[in-house]
Length: 174
Image 1 (tube, rainbow, N blue to C red):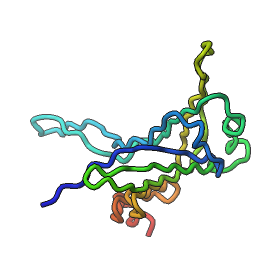
Image 2 (tube, rainbow, N blue to C red):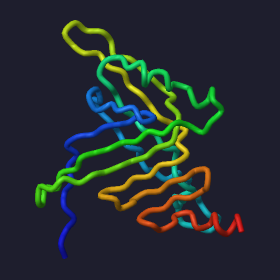
Image 3 (tube, rainbow, N blue to C red):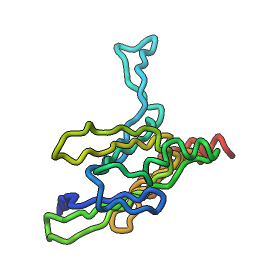
Image 4 (cartoon, rainbow, N blue to C red):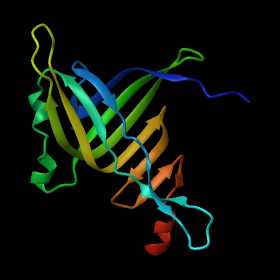
């Protein structure tokens, strides 16, 4: 059986509502997927078991070189507009270590820019700005056009490789 190739991120970019940040992006962290868990000790059990109750809230973190007024203006913007968030599109260039081909990862996130912090000024250093996207209502991640994750909080849906992970939702909404 052949093993999957190691894909290494060589470059990344984020578009803040279609505004390209490729020349100023410093770092980027895609959402961490983690289950919400609770410990349960049944009355007749010998010990506890950890039960999964769903997916924890998602966050995206990124930082930009310098001060970017076009990104700063999105802080709290969707809350003011009464919407469900702004669209952030993330691209990564992935290099296969098996055959050196480039592959493309695309993540599309709908959420709110809810935190901004600034690096301190230091002479000779380009100070940057760090951003956090929270209140994420949708997240899709595709590699080479193949959809890996499709998370939609508003619909109560989470698909992994085309398989619904929240099938119970269909039962309670019928």
